[in-house]
Amino acid sequence: MFYEIRRLNFGSVTIDESMRLRGISPGNRIDVPAQGFLLLGGSAPVLVDAGYRDVSVLGAGGTVAPGQGFEEQLSKHGIGPADLGCVIMTHLHRDHAGHLDKVPMTVPVVVNRSELGSACTGIQGRAYAREDVHHLIDRVYTPGAIRFLDLEQSGPQEVLPGIVCRLSGGHTPGSIGIVVPTEEGEAYLCGDLFYDVEGALRNQPTGTFTAGVQPSALATDDPALSNNFTTSVLQEIGATKHALNYRFIVPAHDDPGVIEGGRYIGRITGDVIPGTWQP
Ligand SMILES: [Zn+2]
Image: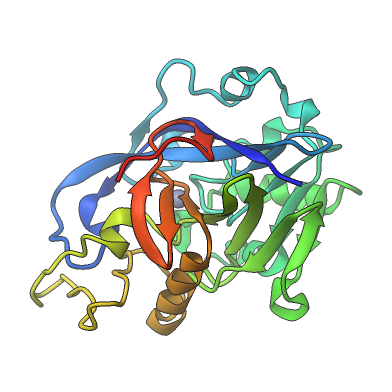
């Protein structure tokens, strides 16, 4: 069974460029897309991640352009929130869980239990939006509205035919990666494990060590890591290397990367995966 993956864009998020990769000097603000993904080809469309509810919850702001509303992005593909079979969350940060309250309670949200646990502790401040957490707690108390994964104990779980969720090991302790079979190989929807796939895997910054700037990896075949994770460095680098096992690395804030033989060979700039790619 194969799926086609469609990119959705729920608006931009303004970040400091140094968040994308260790070794980039801070001070330059850039906009990155807050993407979700539709998985088409099963009995019902599946949504992965759901953007942010409002720019007010973002740290440095963002922009929602005309047509980037939640229902508008879905309607471009001829579906509405009630048509979804489920929503699978890579993690619950404020730029991913924002529109879940627009999804009917009859459509289950699939989430790794430890991720929701982390969101409730306040351990990352406002990286998790209060309104998003409140909504998810409402789902916990509504039969059928949430489906918990316990990937730390269970190991990888097939949640729908061919779609396997596994513990990411990176970004946040409860983050997951979603393996989706396509006609051209497996895609790995990895949330925020990568902010810059090409930079991490092919064009690593060569920053020297200065105050506030982490150098890139010393070993030349190690990937460069982002500057935004709450796991250990050891976990993050292992999680990053795991992503090289797949044909496509599909992050939330960058173009999908194409992998061959464990190496980055190009990016998909269109909205369909698999699709044409550029070296
Ligand atoms: Zn994000």
